[in-house]
Length: 378
Length: 220
Image (cartoon, rainbow over all chains, first blue to last red; front, side):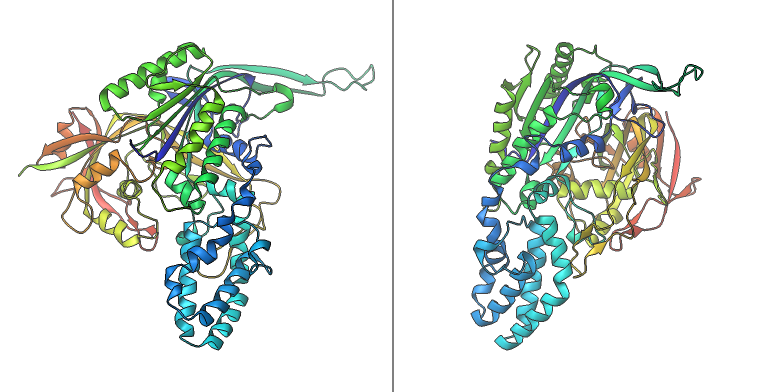
């Protein structure tokens, strides 16, 4: 059984008479592909809407993340791990307490009062290096340790507050998947474990210029004419989108917590299928649901299925799924990459190697994946 | 003496190869740079950004030629980022990084160029030295440590990057062995007319690392 290191998510989503994503000239973003111009929704637009959606499945709403007791013990268990057992307890204690208060706040030394922080691999590596340095500097002297710890706490307070703000729930979950502010220190940065391709229509663009005016109802009889005359673009399209999640990367950002990683993936599938990337909410109501969601779990190099639509395909889910399946079958015949697949489709069409299911089934499948990875124990 | 070359296929609906970038515009060339290929392999190998020496050693050993199998168009994507004045990030230096200033109420606008519908082939070999060998590179292209992307993270490939092996004496012969006509770029040897291409990166400092002499021409 191959390890599910990468989760590939393909979707087809129809949007009619909308202007989902504009460029700086106010027109829909486009992509030339296969000799035809397609309408496009940019990667950053998709990510932003999934990140900020106020949806029952937004990452902010993952229930029970507060109960992740293990993340309250990160400093005790992971930072002061086996190496600390060989050191005199009197020397370790003031340093550990200083670190706990700096990271978790003034009540940090009491486990029950600690807030839950998602400290990932880079945070743990940094804190461990600092702890070892302080212990080495203190030598065997408990008093020196206490003094060093107090001084460290004072000078590093601002830096560690920045660390704990980024790791706090619920923002920490969103940061673990979509990334945090990038600093100039490569050792402190995480790479967002999600890759989102620009979505584009499977067919050549279908756009219409919508000429409209705004009239002032309070205008007097002699004030004729419109107050403003404008033109905007309306596009319709069946969009193909592609997302890859790096599961080991996600686990490392969540401190190895496979259950939380599973919840993040579960909610992400709902967000991809249900959240609109659209703008112009009032004038176009660009709300839709994915008509196809195909997920693949495997360890081979992830690849987009965009080539299925190199020749523009009719803008209809059934035919688009057929084109996708043909291309997927050709890839399987040539490369036999052996991913495990599940598909949710509104069209009654088979996708090679993919067991059909509902969105809940696919989300449940995704939720079980992190636990299958042979990684560090959560 | 016949050498073995790794054949890479770089193709995606949108790709970016990078170029000298000065301001809010992120341009792209139509051939991959030595730094881009180094970064691609480093990602596949699972290296971290701070492994500067390992990256530098790999870049120094790289010998490659590139050929455009399908010429794409340059597409400029307009991107807006809202940066908050109070944003803070921790560092391993003990002081948090802050933003120089907020973008007030308007977003920070920038443009990024991509190559749309472009297909570029690369023939590549490594000089002997410390680090992975060609077989290891081929293996990590098939089973990478992290998802592979071509230039920027949304640039996910549509085909496996590893496209096979080629036997040839030198770069030009390897490019000819692809049996695809197109415009190509290869390292300058001997007295061929060439030009300076600033596509090297200094991986230890993270800044640009100078240029190398290359030739560009048509492969029949």
